[in-house]
Image (cartoon, rainbow, N blue to C red; front, side, top):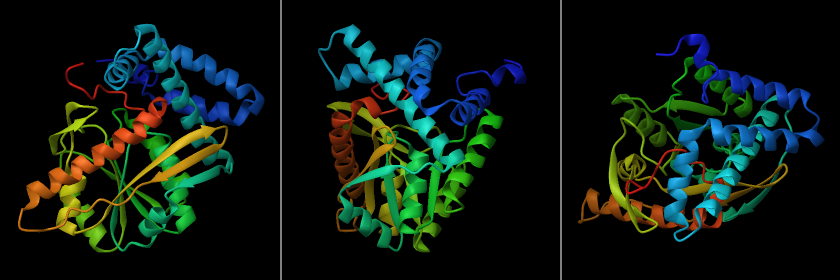
Length: 301
């Protein structure tokens, strides 16, 4: 096992988060594109597991592509990721205002006015920034479900960042091997809160089931849909996409319902998951370079 001081410099170590904060504060805005370009090249080679995961996912999403083309697409995905985490740091430290375009504004309004709902999203754009902006814009608190960071110092840094960015309106619930989280989320929804969950890749210690994505059998978390069924709460697919410098698009889709009927819970959950993967596939196809799934999703790859 690597010593504690060395883990700070691992890909997910706290050093890089602190360095990013320093860069946002001290690098002139006109040098940011050059800086981000350089560091994307560095991490393209240094973060080999993430690079291989993006490549494996692209082989399914873009079948028949030349290998070199998918390598370039992988680099572009990492480049977009670098911009989104830099923007999140900029928002946190400097309070920079961003321009947002809304797609599906009527669904966002319904989500904001719902008494108890699930916001289902993916690893696209800036998850933390999107939650903070939604909470601020609609004056609603969000309970965000996250997987704990492996590094303790990184986890503490992200917790402080999210508390500062969300101005107290974003609460974090960690997805760990515990039976208390589902009950906590159920009570939150029944008390009128919005619970935000990412549903585009399997999570350790979380319930999963098979479904189809891009024609392949994949394992995705079914917790959001079971929760929606038990609470009888609507599930709103929402995504945030980076358009260009300090410009984002928030995409909302028609809510998914897991209604009780004579067919039972299993059928309702499976149908809801199929609707979710259909929506997810549509959004990823249009914005493939902003799907930051740095783990292999398709087992055959």
